[in-house]
Every structure is written in C-alpha cells, then in structure tokens.
Image (cartoon, rainbow, N blue to C red; front, side, top):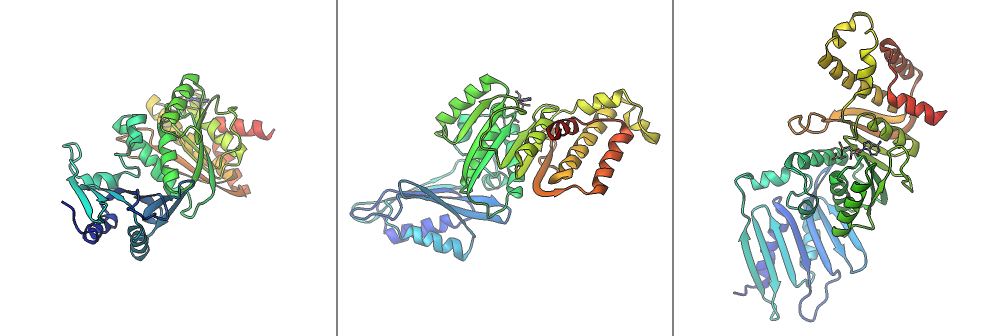
Length: 383
Ligand SMILES: C[S@@+](CC[C@H](N)C(=O)[O-])C[C@H]1O[C@@H](n2cnc3c(N)ncnc32)[C@H](O)[C@@H]1O
C-alpha cells in the first residue's frame, strides 16, 4: 500500500543516521524531476579519527566521495540527499532492509524486510562492527578465502587505516609484494577506494599462474584498469611508477627482506610487511657460538628459532630506522588467527639514523656474529 512520502523519508532518514547502517543507495528519479547526481551510496567507514559516514555520489561521469562526521555534519548531508528527487532508496542495516520507491503519483511504496542472522553470527551488529570491510560485501563471494584469512586481512587493513593520515587525498599507488591469490590486494583496493582515494594497485608474485588467475578476477570485479598483476620477483618486477605504499603479507622467509629493500629503493612513504617464516638468522645462529651468557637462548632448536624470529624483526626495524623510516613492530591480529601475527609498520621520515643508532645496530649483529639478509640487500643497493 502506498504511504505518504514524507513519513517514509523520515523513516529512511533515521536508518541512514543509525550506527547500524551498513549500506544505502539512492538512484533513479521522480516523474518530471532530475536529481543533481545520478546515484548516491552511503556506508560507514572506520577511520583513525573514528567512524565516518561515507557518501559517494556520481554525476554520471566522475565519482565524488566524502566522509562526514556523525552529528550535525552527517545530519545536513543526509537531509540534502533526501531533498533530492531520487526515485528509489535502498537501505540496509544489520537488522533490516528497507526499499522505498516513489510512485508516479508521488507517494512511497515501501518494502521492509528483517535481515536473517545465521547461528554462526548471533550478534549481527557486533559482526559488522568487528570488521573494517563489510563481510557481506559481494567482492568476498568472488575472491573467496577462509574465515581465518578474512579475519587476518581485515586486521591488516585496520593497521593500514591506522597508518595512513585521515586527510590523505590524491592518487595513491600501491603494491602488494608476494600477493599470492591476491586476497589482500583486492580487499585493500576495496578499502582504499571506499575511503575515496584514487587508487592504482599492483600485485606482484613470482608465479605466472597467480598473475593469470588474479588478472581474470580483477576483470570479473570490473577493476581491470585499477588492479593489475605482474609475474616477477619482488626484487626485480617492473612496477612503474614507484608506489607510495607497499604491502607484503607473509612473503616467505627472506622475501620480506626483499620487500623491505625494494620499498627503500622506491622511497615508499609507507610500508606494511607482516613477515612469514624466518630461516635465515636461525641457520646462522646454529653455526655460531652465542655471546657471553646467552647460550641458553639458542641451545635448543625451538628456542633458537623463536629467538631468531625476534632478532630478525628487531634488526629489520633497526635497519629501516637507519634508512630514514620510523619503524615499529606490532601484533596486527590475534595469534589464534595466524601464528605469523607480527607486522613491521614503517613511515618514511627522511631522517637518517643517528650515530648512536648505528652503533647500537652494529653492536647487536657483531655480538651474535650474524649478517641479516636485509643488511646485505641494502649494502648491495648502496654499493
Ligand atoms: C605465503 S604466500 C602469501 C600470499 C599472500 N600475500 C597472502 O597473504 O595470502 C607467499 C607468496 O609470495 C610469493 N613469493 C615468495 N617469494 C617471492 C619473491 N621473491 N618474489 C615474488 N613472489 C614471491 C609466493 O609465490 C607466494 O604466492
């Protein structure tokens, strides 16, 4: 039954401003009228400064995206959109879907449905807030991946969200090194473009079969001109122009060192690398006596491996600091989702390391008699 349009739009307004909103789209036009934009899409996005309402509009040629703060700013933006003579509103919250169509006589035909929750997802609202990317996003049906992988990648993107400045604008060149089946690549593209950034992302993997598969997937998602793939090594793959942001999730063993060395060569502004296994220093420690009283740390195999992990990442972060980056090592996801849950997060400052930092680094590697792979790669680049 048709309803008064004003009353129905008041209901839509409340849903658009509700924290339970997951997505809304306005499109079409009312009889004899033309909205100033052909389409508007709204969704909540998690930024470092907190949740914002993202509004993406299109004039038919170019998209325009902005993020508005909850409160007066969001109220005004939503009111402006509701005043446009759109013919349809489709609004999804964690609990309900409401579809409003404006009839020829200017009334509202409204369809309301409750969102079904599965037993595995008892708290729909919490489920959505837990993730940076909406788990119901249709891209996941295309890119697949296990629940653990999804959780891991979402957590990686949260770390990315906390790294990039909120006011970042302009084109952003991104590379995902050792991208494998590109789960992170596609999810990162989705997240960054939802932030309104003009993103071009290149996935690099040594396996040509991955390049073919991922290129097909990009075409199916309609992103072929924005997300491209190169079959090549992290050290040498052609990525032109150089990226601003480097991602590397579980690139094997010293491939993480290659990713860090390549990032420095590119002068990337941000680097997020979650290391995988660390065999390089563990092998070196096996053949050298531990310094002083530290023999107990490396005498047993499992302790030696764990200590090598810590030493490797501490030295990687130290080398980044010596080469003009502010670097930290953080846990990006709970270890129940992956035991490889450390992330080296670096931001270019341009400040070279101090003499004291150099001495500190040299002291540590000399005491243990090791040469980290990253040191060798950087020396080769400098030499
Ligand atoms: C453990 S998988 C991780 C894949 C993906 N980043 C993820 O997290 O799902 C590591 C990937 O890095 C690739 N890889 C390893 N060493 C590489 C190198 N030196 N150059 C390019 N790719 C490399 C492998 O082919 C593999 O696909």
